[in-house]
Amino acid sequence: MCINCSRRIDTLSSKGRIKAVAYLRTSSSANVGQDKDSERRQREAIDTFVKAAGYEIVDS
Image 1 (cartoon, rainbow, N blue to C red):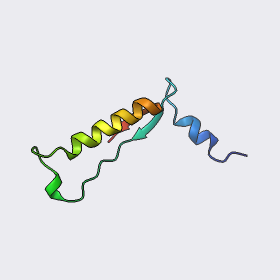
Image 2 (image 1 turned 90 degrees about the horizontal axis):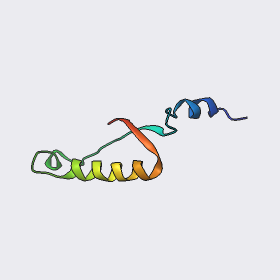
Image 3 (image 1 turned 90 degrees about the vertical axis):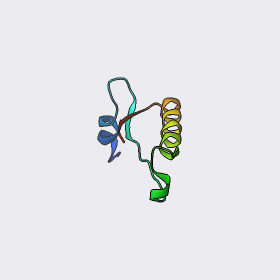
Image 4 (image 1 turned 180 degrees about the horizontal axis):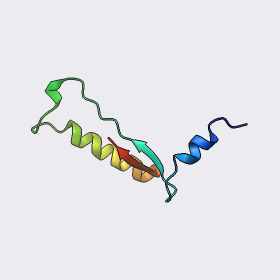
């Protein structure tokens, strides 16, 4: 018996993509700001992964 089956089914959108939340992290405030690229690089990596894996980012 699958306890989480209904939960898994609920996470699928009408297009069959798995809904997910993107989590971005920085190790210190020194990595945040307009002159820093940590957030951009993380978003690019997330976007590449979700396209390949069939996810849909619903929040970040």
